[in-house]
Image (cartoon, rainbow over all chains, first blue to last red; front, side, top):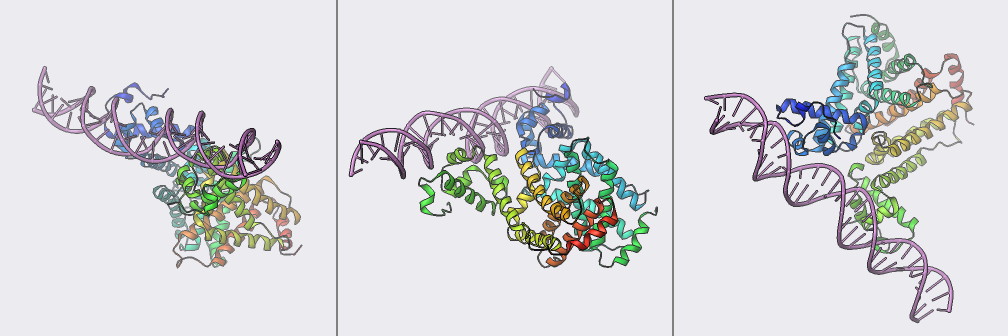
Length: 221
Length: 221
DNA sequence: CTCCTTATTGATGGTTACTCAACAGTAGGG
DNA sequence: CCCTACTGTTGAGTAACCATCAATAAGGAG
């Protein structure tokens, strides 16, 4: 039995834009309950109260449909984590990590799907999307570091990509533990935050250079 | 046109064990060329010179077949990275990282499939396999640390899981760069090795405790 | 109310995972 | 050496699913 959002939306004629967002919303809801591999065209169509053929009309193929769903979820995640320029660089990092932890905690299956599952699969577009997410986060941070006087280098870039994987894995493992056994959320965020500094430091050639930069991170713009 | 290993093996009657390893070998060979998502039962059967039905007889389902392939590859990887007890703890870590980098470099698609793609997908068995790999590496390291006087804690465990994700991502990103632009392999290994120490240090409550342990890691058993 | 645009459907084909009853190769007893 | 029982193996058949496309019907413009 399909969960019909609204009798109006289900069968009736809709503008292409409205129909697309409605189908995407249905798919997103389904993603909450099952892995993305299990998102068949039929199931999404049923969830949206629409014939399967329509999905092909709007999205072209199953792959592109899944791609669109992932992209929507990714945008949503980026919106939540986007840094606030009013804060100091150090505060931006910390609140970004907190926002990430909270968002993933709220809908683990959905966001872990975007962040981790995406990395897999020879599928070039999906891989590209995943790289784009990583790159966006990386740019945010390197921009901040550049502002503090640390020019971007390939090594720092590599370290930041690795750090993101570290954060994803740590948060995922933290969520996998029974709620009672988990370390406090603040400690988790601490680990991620300090991990960022330590790993970037490793990638900076001159330790003295790094020492001079750290104090700048706490200063408000 | 199927690549038949040996005319004897292809059509003839074989013992169940021999047939299983032959099919697994065929699937593994195919995995070298295409992503695991593209491992259809038909293609593996053709590669093994056998009817598709036989794969179901031996493995039960496509999922279990893929699972078995991943498990075989994982065992292979663990064998290569297994630490040498004759070395000091520090040397064990470094040569383990080197073995990992080399093995993944040799067959990127295959081992990245095990290490990363595995983490995805709600598929519980696959997820379990992935956790088992992580846990195995983690036990190797925590055993070493325990030997040096650092008892295992949940925080250290978490940090080590995260560190593995860091290493995987860094190595994957390193391999994605054109060979000319890559930093030297030794620098990559350095980054991973020092990353391990830094991240574990963050997870240890008492910094002094950690300071006392570090010198022990270089000493041969 | 009528026409025309176009959102939507239903029929259809091809691929692929999966089942099962029938077949055939091999070992062991006479 | 032949026959028989066991079991490894096959091939046909089913169902689910991705994908295509001509036909249909909803809704606004005149």
